[in-house]
Length: 133
Image 1 (tube, rainbow, N blue to C red):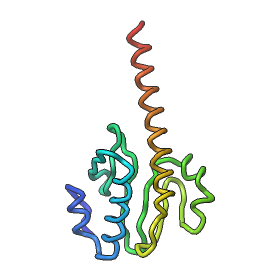
Image 2 (image 1 turned 90 degrees about the horizontal axis):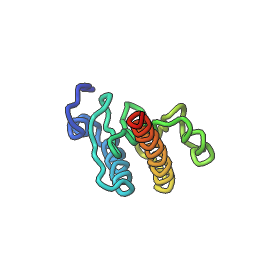
Image 3 (image 1 turned 180 degrees about the horizontal axis):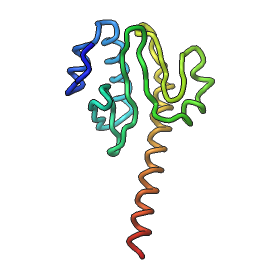
């Protein structure tokens, strides 16, 4: 498969039909929970940005699709909800014919948004603290 994608559309165009359908459906579900979502290619896979930070990424492979949560803590927290899915580290793998439950995606997005908010707040606090010296 081609690996120097310049856009998310380039990525979609390289996918087999079954994988493409699964990934586009997942992208739409993510868009439903992320206002003003901005998709781009990072590490050669479609990634959605939230407040300037990567929120989630999705990808299709020969035998599965993946949702990259980008947080081991969140994956660990949701172990019960992930029963029946193959997951490790920050990655949830599923078959193109299998959908991730919308309520699971919604939980993951809410938790990732909280993590990003904490990171941005810590960054603002550090900036504020250094400017007061």
